Image (cartoon, rainbow, N blue to C red; front, side):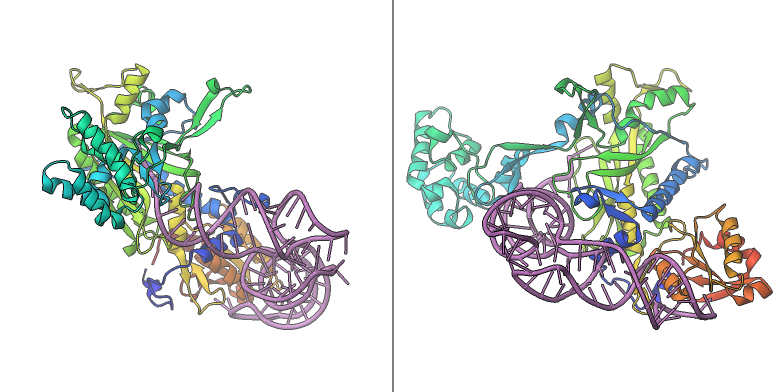
Length: 544
RNA sequence: GCGGGUGUAGCUUAGUGGUAAAGCUCCAGCCUUCCAAGCUGGCUAUGAGGGUUCGAUUCCCUUCACCCGCUCCA
């Protein structure tokens, strides 16, 4: 990006998300969904330019995956086939995949401090990560046995500070009397640490039963509330609970449930991939940050089926391929990282996962996920084999005695997030030009590849422009703009990131030459009118 | 889901319990011009609903959307 270095904008000048959102609306990239009705939280519409941009990114992904997949380690191109599965599948698919039961985290709210705690991590958190929990535990362990005096002492000193809302702190005598009753009542089975903590959170045992304390402040937690992220709908006109179905939470499951169909119909052999681009839906608890977390979004997912012994090799292979791809659409530099998931962050079925993350203006200096590359083992195929009762084993064509469930490497990218990253990356402040900024799109994703601008509306210039336009539009998305002064038109093209402007002037009719105006440098050069198309062809792949 | 903030035209900002103002953008025309030029004209707004009031953009309530911080993001 050498041209970036001589503009006035420093490379890491923080970009203002508000300006990017405003530009997107003003120029027709992205609008709030249902805008004239006041919008709807978590949904966005793509305008004319946003649609072009998104389609370009999608097509480049499809090309890199399906039409022209990379060369594998053995020197031959790998094989990936495409799929476009239904958004709604048999609800059993989502039971098998674990989304119906597990695509949610049971949360418990604390009435004292207002924080949520994951119900399934509560005791682990209390015993290991809670300030007051570990402090109390330490006191007890030093004594080697449970002693209400020690707890009382703790409650009146450290506990006051660390767990102000804990029952034993607020009301020590009553609370401890219940615990003493319990310890003395059943000397043969002393209470566990968990039960002790519950007692310390309980002042009114008879009316409330044992309470669970908040790891932060000690107040008794409220019951579980689960957020299931799957969006529901009802099939048929009667809309009873029996007709309940789900909008897909990811495109991947459509691939897994078609795995057998594709193996049986497409002459593919392991290792091979199945790719799909499409909408997915999640009831995000809190949609935020423009199109970054929305309830309807688009994914580009590829499931790579391989022998378990080769999975690690393919994992590394796809990591590298994905890095190259993001770079190829102009998302690169220091603002993209590959981050390995720590063991406690991994979902249970994944052996390893890397996130491709981009430094969005709203995450900076941190990063936000663009793509997850996950080693999913044979989890999904196993689940679907079990739930559907259909054998999904792959039979080695060379050795019919070898049968196995392939393992899966999944590079799953967010198309919607990719669009956002490209928009953020392209947004370049430049006080030295009339528009004050320009969109530095890689030409291969730019919504409009070139604008054709007659300098004036007279002298036959519009006619020449029209002719050029009719020719170029056969192959490229181009814009013909005749009205208004040339400066305004250049400024408009800068704002929508058009890499080239071809300007027809008085010389054109005499010597058949036009001006090429470069977006990033604003420099101009003169080329022959009949060379415009080949000029575009040569320069659209360049990004410097 | 919680707390805080914001909401007047496409954008930036005025203003008022009594006909809502301007600049830029945009559109049309003139000019014929290589970086938002000039002249003339034009379109477009009080987020939504309810209440108080003779009358509400203004006061009150509710709601929606957006922003920030938590929370969440199998």
